[in-house]
Image (cartoon, rainbow, N blue to C red; front, side, top):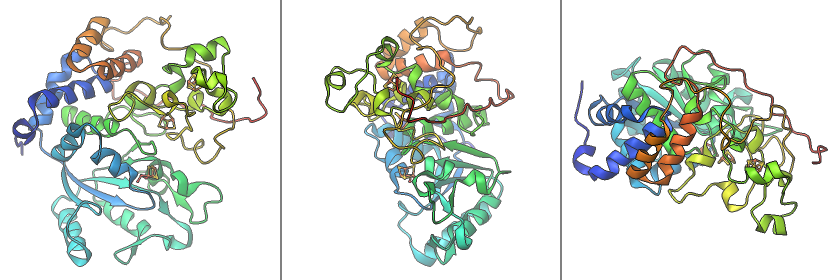
Length: 380
Ligand code: FSX
Ligand code: SF4
Ligand code: F3S
């Protein structure tokens, strides 16, 4: 059933349009589709969402709900019917269990399950119990009737910090436990709230989820390496590096590769999407990327370990030698118009989108993921 979104009445119209235009650009869709995204955000049926918490810090919920731009959290909460969320709901104990089961029964086969946190599997999962059940049992029970599972954060996507060696609880990501379910991973510790919002908006607009990579991440957000869009990349190419925190190179804003930056092996859009509506991201404030969106980087390699660059890609600021497929993204004029609408953040999103291939084709095969080894001995 279609319902009219409360946003049309409650959220300032300008904020609503800005968020939809920004999400459209982030998804890599042509600007001409922003009215379609807007219409879906206002009128599409709100899917039922059951949100489970396992081994985690709740930073993923915090990232979505306390985003500095209120329209992100308002949009997310208005686009879905959030039937169960242990941190947000007022009910507790038996009342909460009853609400969970009532929602599962009423929406069997149609609800979306959002999972936050890793799932311990050692000793039958006794390391995380909720309502007398293990996280493992809860996951299997709720996943059974779910249409799809959205794993928010690196913990539910790949195990995260809980799965760091020696991983005493046998923590795993959801797709390792339920490999045959329809799963979308939105990693990051925590992930960008815009990546979560845009994935939901994409579904509401096109009635399907966006194209995914081999690690089940939406390609619009995780299709390119951070290193390709980093503002320090000209320093990398020129061989200018910070060698120690606080040295002259660090103060001058040189490349952080020698401090262990994992940008060359990390697929994410942090360097263009950025955080907190303040235009910042780890590298911009002087900290190397620790590869928080990758399964084998964060907590599997030390922060100082140097990334091994196996498949170098050019800085995206250089003109491409590949012809751009017609209609594959906004042209420079579109980028300018988007900039007029919502400022530099959207322009940056559109820049990423312009570089991505044919993301409207859902049939496209997932590409193999490159090796992300690290080698501390590799001095440059
Ligand atoms: Fe994990 Fe989410 Fe890192 Fe925390 O809950 S992705 S520990 S920011 O918040 O799951
Ligand atoms: Fe930027 Fe890190 Fe690449 Fe240097 S190594 S250009 S700091 S992403
Ligand atoms: Fe994570 Fe690196 Fe982005 S540490 S937040 S993927 S810059």
